[in-house]
Image (cartoon, rainbow, N blue to C red; front, side, top):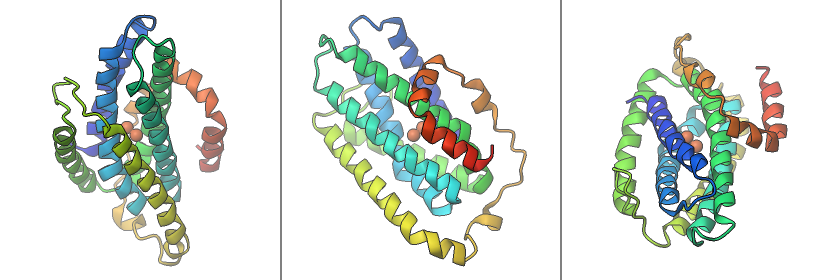
Amino acid sequence: MNAIDLLKEDHRRVETLFAQFRENENGTNGALFKKIRDELLTHAHIEEKVFYPDLLKRGKKDLKAIVREGLEEHGQVKKLLSELDKMTPRNKAFNPKLKVVVEDVEHHVEEEEGDMFDMAEDQLTESRLETLGAEMETEKARFQKRMGIKPSREPQIKKGVLDTVMETTKDLVTGAFLASDESKPSARKTGKGNGSGEKRSSGSGNGGGRSSRSSTGAKNQRSRTKASSSARGSARGR
Ligand SMILES: [Fe+2]
Ligand SMILES: [Fe+2]
């Protein structure tokens, strides 16, 4: 499966869980949290392990910037998940914190589908996206097996797993910034390694994901990060 299709499929699945949370925002959501956590950790893992590194390697400057922001957002969400993991669902702060996770992820998904994925489709070949999709499917199965996450959405994650996962994100974020520092001058000098060769023919018609997303929850969160998003948007001239 194409990488973009696979990731969008994951997004839609987690949105279903978010809808369940919204219907029960004042109830007990311990079991639902575990499903959300396992979905998000698995999804973040395959993006960080397979998709994002490839975009950082082959993407242009604007795409790399979004990927780095995405990594930061993954880190924030994982931190919240880790805090929730240590709380009892009866704790008064549990649902509000879970709500922040939902809003953060909605914002993140909106940026991925509204900006990052479109750029990836423009800047990577179709065959590359197919390869990445296959790699992510393999990596997903491997991660779920290692973490004790059942693909059937039966969450049974092992204790302490979140600390390990957060360390991985931290390393990736650091690596991304180091890579960008290294690549800045050389990328310009060498004529942008991926520009012409990797470009797909335009008109792939994949803007569907963007227009289909207009979640209200994301709007709240959007205001929080409006400054960074709009700055980037105007820089891109979109
Ligand atoms: Fe992501
Ligand atoms: Fe994603």
